[in-house]
Amino acid sequence: MRHRYRVAAVLIIIVIICLLNYQIDKNLQKEHEEHKLALTNCMKSGRIFNSSVPETKDFGSSFTISFADIQKTHSWLYLPKFQNSMSSEILMIVASRTDSFARRNVLRKTWMNPENSEIIKDGRMKALFLVGMTDGDDSRMRKVVMEEARIYGDMVVVDLKDTYEELPFKSLTTLLYGTSKASEFKLIGKIDEDIMFFPDKILPLLEQNLIDPSSESIYGMLFAEGGYVYRDKEHRWFVPDSTYGCDMFPPYTGGLFYLVTQDAAKKILNATKHRIFIPIEDALINGILANDCKIPRIHLPEIYGDHHSLTDEDTRGVLAWHTGKNDQQFLDYFYRKLSESRLKKKILDEKNKHLFY
Ligand SMILES: *[C@@H]1O[C@H](CO)[C@@H](O)[C@H](O)[C@H]1NC(C)=O
Ligand SMILES: *[C@@H]1O[C@H](CO)[C@@H](O)[C@H](O)[C@H]1NC(C)=O
Image (cartoon, rainbow, N blue to C red; front, side, top):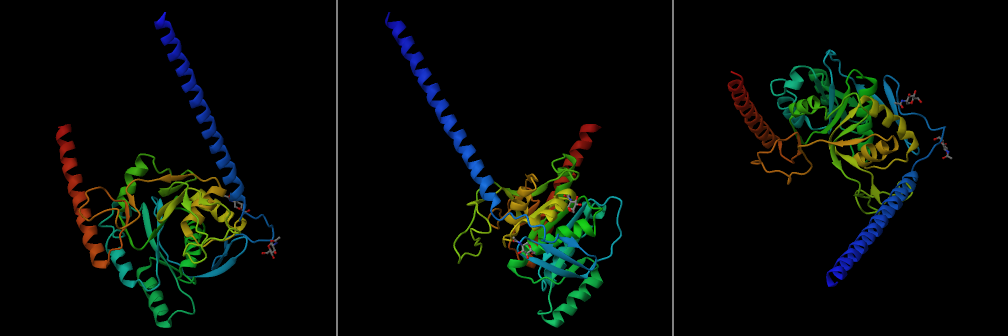
């Protein structure tokens, strides 16, 4: 008899637990739905459909980047001439400061050098710099930049101001250059000049189809939804309520290094005119605009966003690392890591050879 009571008691407790769980699940689900609705609603603020706003467009020797509230027209001051290779796949554009002459030479010596990168050597990746300068800049520096562009043939020069606020325009110029002047490339990449970069790390990602150049996607270091929107006027990343209404940014890939497929880039460029401008490059382009166009943002491994995220002795692989290294430290680390990975590969190849014979 007592045994039966016990069974009944246990059963009742189980039922209660199930009911509680169900209620919690339902509440969570409700919360999730409410959150989604709130996000959809707040994403509408800053989105404007005004048919008089012109398109973001290339006109040959000039181009317009057009937001709902700001339109800017710029000129291509220098366009590089290069031979298209049948194997052209990735156009990598380095956002470079006007006077970073030494840094550009460091990059030409390291990852852009065909001897150090298979993907560059076999023509699958082409690397260019994007440099902005205006009439207000020192005229001697302007002359040297144009001379450098002519000598190396690896620079796109535009009359853009080299300031933080202009960064989104610079990155959209990258996408516009890729879609209008170099549309044979399936992927358009943007990278900062202070990023340690090993382009050959992209090869296995392409082989494993983790990167699909024929899709509509953005690849990079993914920040999940929840990037904080600063409402403090004094903050460097201040965003007024009226221009973007959500408390969080949608998921976005960090601005240090990302790849955009041709189709995704075209959609993003079409979407700018329906959005009010905000001066936060990665959250705006790879987050808000990508979200407006429903372009998936996909995480790639081995990208490190901060110079604290790795030490020089760390043996993990590196695709891209925001290092903060000076030119000499950059060269030293690049060559050491490259020879390490080549040695590793040689040992692995030897091992495989022995397995086969
Ligand atoms: C639509 O855009 C045009 C051109 O930029 C502008 O003059 C006009 O004020 C805008 N209309 C509205 C309702 O915002
Ligand atoms: C972009 O807009 C133009 C002009 O409205 C249109 O012809 C084109 O199909 C659009 N492209 C994409 C990828 O949405």
